[in-house]
Image (tube, rainbow, N blue to C red; front, side):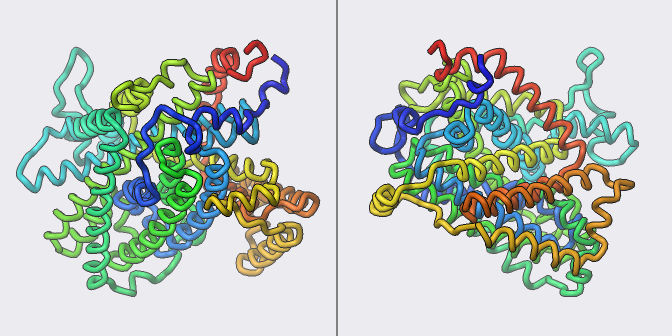
Length: 558
């Protein structure tokens, strides 16, 4: 295979023949409206980030974490517009994978598809663990007690035992039954919710939609109740200092904060089940992002206002704040809200992953079985079952912290390529733009970045130098935080390159800002994050060269 074949792109006309634009027939039921898509987006975004990850973010950044939520929201807003542009042009399942195939070519498409496994499948492992914690608390309120060795993952229990750390894990390790020389320790509720969600998604999109919409209503109502009740317990002194650990502490919560947002792109995987994807997908993504950003900022202020930030480094922060304030009746309500919210997140993520595998299978990059549609339920049945196993098996041997960091870096990587992919697409002609407008299709407003982006880069550098006088000197000092310094220097270089390209190529400003802002968030990832992500990519490339490139529908032999 020639090197150029690795970067061959897939024509949009061929993609549309697979269905999904409302003009070509597909095998999936078209049942989703803009309301359903918005609710799926809210269902995916308001979940683990709200009831679990937000605690670690506040613990790291203090009240100043709202700045990170705003930065992430802006980055995701630009990225959502890039997703919307792609969804308008390429209204089929596959999300960023399909978009990369159109713009960057087959190799990058495979890398994105492989990275999205982390976002959807592996991300659901974190949600399952968090769901289990709240569900167990809910059972306790009804005086139903599960054995400790059935409510914690093996890795955490073993670590707590080795560190002689008192608590659930230490006790579970001591009391767990044995199977030969192996201790039987696993998170039973996490396993069971994965089985239940997999079955529901297998049965059909219509059933999933109805349950998702109901859960969104419930959790939004309860979150509003949390905000209203929490307002009466705010002590404004807790907001001082605003950034107790400096801006570095704020950025230290990037994995937790960004994890809260990754669900909005799950909407794009539902293109072929949308009644009017080219009009409704963009609206669904952007509406859900705006709604959730407002809620996250308010919740962060409520949490850091009710209790000091250093008490929020727990897995159930919303329950913790009311426990510390002695508002016991809210503990029960928060537990119900968390169970509902995280169930809806798992539902959306579990819907997304099989549809990405289905699309990759259509292209020959995955075995044909993954694209088989169930004759009765009209879902990618085999891919759905495999997704259930991919989520379920690691529950037995991994823990929440690893999964959280692993998922965030893979998703940011995918977002960068989506924004870059829009820049590589040929611009709409005037006739095509008029036709799109008449049909209600989304188009990113073109703002010439020729002068604006270079000026933004220079202006931002001047502001940073003025506000943080030692920032640039510290960045180029490799005596501490080598990984952070290297990634920040690479980010500086990217800004300069994009400024030059914007000037020479008259690039569109919005996708440029999306690409740069997502790359900035990547600078907050640790060396351990990058090492595991690199290993994951190597495994993916081995699979591609062993199977995908030989069976690709775009291969020379095809």
